[in-house]
Structures are given as structure tokens and as C-alpha cells.
Amino acid sequence: MTLAIIFSRASCGIDAPLVTVEVHISNGLPSLAIVGLPETAVKESRDRVRSALINNHFEFPVRRITVNLAPADLPKKNGGRFDLPIALGILAASQQIPLEVLAQYEFAGELALDGTLRGFSGALPFSLLTSNAERKLVVPLENADEAALPKNSVVLPARHLLEVCSHLLGRNELLPHTAKSPTVKQIKTLDIIDIYGQIHAKRALAIAAAGQHSMIMVGPPGTGKTMLASRLPSILPPMSDQEAIESAAIHSICGKKFDHFLWQQRPFRAPHHTASSVALVGGSSPPRPGEISLAHHGVLFLDELPEFSRHVLESLREPMESGCVTISRAAHQAIFPARFQLIAAMNPCPCGNFGNKKAVCRCTQDQIQRYRTRISGPLLDRIDLYVEVASLPSCFFDKKKNHNSENSQQVQQKVIVARNLQMKRADKTNAFLDNAEISDFCQLADWDQKLLEDMVTKANMSARAYHRVLKVARTIADFEDKKQIDRGHLAEALSYRYEI
Image 1 (cartoon, rainbow, N blue to C red):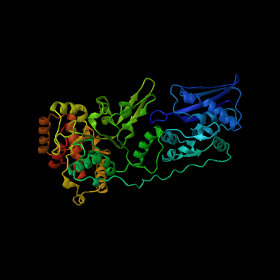
Image 2: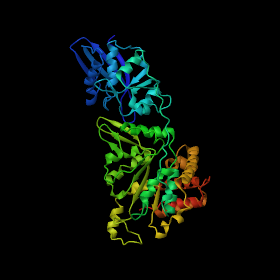
Image 3: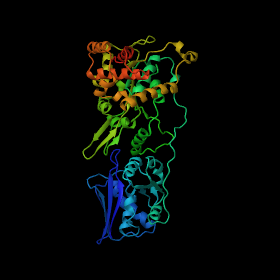
Image 4: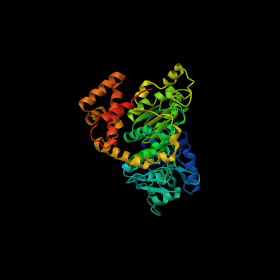
């Protein structure tokens, strides 16, 4: 037989579609042709494969070799992951290794000229789908820990092409890889108790953490806005295994090596205000994830919010609602998850001293208005909590007066209790309740409903703002372990609704 079929997978966003590597050897002038929309790096496989086979004393067929990467309409990219399956296909088609055992495996890996296997990006999504297909995965040793994360996956790591061939020939079997038990690294983390005063802002931060709400902090420079945002991950619940794998899969396709010691630590992304929309949302060709996807199941912190380009900020509106972003190009389309928690910070005016009793504001009313209108109304409408962070008097910096504050661990326990209530009730956090769920879980007493309707009319709130007030009130009630939303919860939720 001169036809061999090997299974591998391509990379398309966080998906890894199946690719069938078909190798046919026929009579004709000696050549090696690769078809099936291979990119340049994949086309170069012919030279790497030829050298690897010859240097390991395999017979390279002096005939016409055709390699088809099916399906033909799926672009094959991301470097040399197809080197190993192409090499094995040539060996199987030339009857140097058995054909019958290949159907139970999937292969991926880049070949060095001496046959050494090198790692590739995107091993985790690859392994997830291989496990679902009930096949064994053969990968370079470099990718073994990452590929072995999914449960029920059978990963066979190899250092060299000869090890893979020896396994297929039944001589020296590759042993299934046992992944290291992911553990949370015991490192000194930032603690919310380090922030003096700002009781109101700390309370709002805890509510945002409990319900996964977006929040914007406004205040003069040096009042602790950035410190508050950087402490948010310390009070968020640890990620579940499923959330951790989803987050790791996004980092995997970016070529970032998975770190077992950072397992279940939520991402905290803080891009500079000069970041472009492509850097923030994702893009290029083929599409790659941006900061909002890298912050999936974590925090996206935008400091100096008005300094970001208006076009960049407007690109956040759809992902904040849908929890995903679709990147479309002429020849490629990819959907990346983007379930992030937005935390923003800004000054009240260009000089930062508007409303600051310790300094004089040098800005005119027109300058202040132009500065604040850099953030559009529709974007502000999607932010749940507005918090003013005022400057502190010097007496607040006495450590003895801060000893009654709660530390991050204590706040985190309250957040976990509130999150558990939400997951038990709706299987999602309050920030992502839909309209029907809001009607079921955010009911008010008649007099409280009348109060809310009056406030909506006076403040000219949109329907979206109305629903967000209810969701925040529900979170405040959960944070205090109350079954019903009372007037105090509603009043506090309305106090966070003041807009710039």
C-alpha cells in the first residue's frame, strides 16, 4: 500500500479542528508536494522532514510524494506542528512503520534536522479535542504538562522521532504522562488591608467582586485608585478547574508556557492607555486574542480611562455584553471568549484636582467637560458601579487606626459565600443575569419599586441602567446573606449609579 492516513489538528482561535494528513507515494519524478492551504512555515516542512528522516537512517522514497492536509479549505498555520505527522505518514506509506496502529493516535510536533521534537503553541486546545475523540496524543516532551491537564486525556510525550517510531513498532512503548498536580503558588500577594481609609471604595470593590460587576473609580491622583484595583484579585474566589483550563487555553494559543504554580489565579491585565484596538480586542491575520480575552475569567484594569482612544473604548461595548469577541478577516474568522471584569480609574479633570480640598484646580469648565465626554454615554451605561475616591486627611495614615480593617482573606470568604448563593440560584453571577432572571430573582416590595421608578424618571436612566441597579441590589443582598432585597440594598445600589 502507498497511502497512509495520520490524524492531527490545526489551530483556529481556541478551537483545534481535525486535520487528516494523507500521504500518497506514486511513480514519477522524485518530489514532495504539500497541498491543502499550507502557510509558508508548513510548506517548509518538506525540508525539515527530509533531513530528519535521512539523518536517522530511514529510507526517503525517491518517488513522487503527495501530502494532502484535509480539509482543503481550512488554512494550515502555526508553524511546524505538522512535521511529525507528515514524517510518520511518509514512513507508513513506504511500509517502514505499521499502518494499522495509526488510527488510535493523533500527532503533533516540530522536527529538528536531527529528528529531535520541538514544542508548539496551542497544545491545550489540541489535547481537549483529542480526548473528546477518544484518541491518544503524541506530543513533544515540552508540551506534555500542558497537554495532560484535561481529565481522561492520554498523552504520550517523546523527545525524538526515533522514540515515536519505536513505540509504533512495538519495541519501546511511550509511557502516558502524568501531569504535575496544579497547586496555587504560596507567594506574598497584595492585601486590601494595605489601603488606609477609603471604606466606601473598599465596600464597593467587595460588591463588585461578589457579583462580578464592572466598576469605575474617579478621584484625584494619589488617592489609591490603582491600589484598590490591584487588590481586587486577592478578594476574588479561586477559579474552578474548568475556568482555569479555559483561561490557560487562551494563553496556550499565544505561545505562553503554562505555569502550574499560577493555577487558579485569576488573570489581571492592565494595558497602557496607548494600546490600540487590535491590542485590546484582538486581530491581525490570522486572528489572535487581545487583552480582553487574556483577561477571561479575570480582571481588565484600564487606568487613566479618558486617555484611551475613543475608538478603542467603544470596541469594549459588545464584548462586555456578550462575553466573547468575534474577529473577522477576509480569509479568517475566530471567536475568542472575553468574560472579563472591567475596572477603570480616572481623574475628575485634566489636572486631577477638581474637588480636591488640598489643591487648586486649574481647569476651566469647558476643559473638564471635554475631558469627561471622552467616555461615551453608552459605555458608561454598561458600567455598574461609579465610585468617588476622595483624598484622605493625614490622620488616616496611622497604622494603629487601620487595624480594624478586614484583610483580603476575610473579604474573600464573604465574596465566596455570595458567589455560591448566586451559582446555586442561577448558575451564573448577578452581573450576567438576563431580563427574565432579573424578574425572578430581583423582586422588590411595592414601595421600593415605586422609589426605583421615580429615581429612573428623575435621573433619566435607560432600561439597561434600571436592570443594572437591580442586579447590584441583588448582589448587596447576597453579600449580606439576605434572601430579599430591602430598601437599604436598593438605596446603596442607586448611590453607585451616579454618572460622570
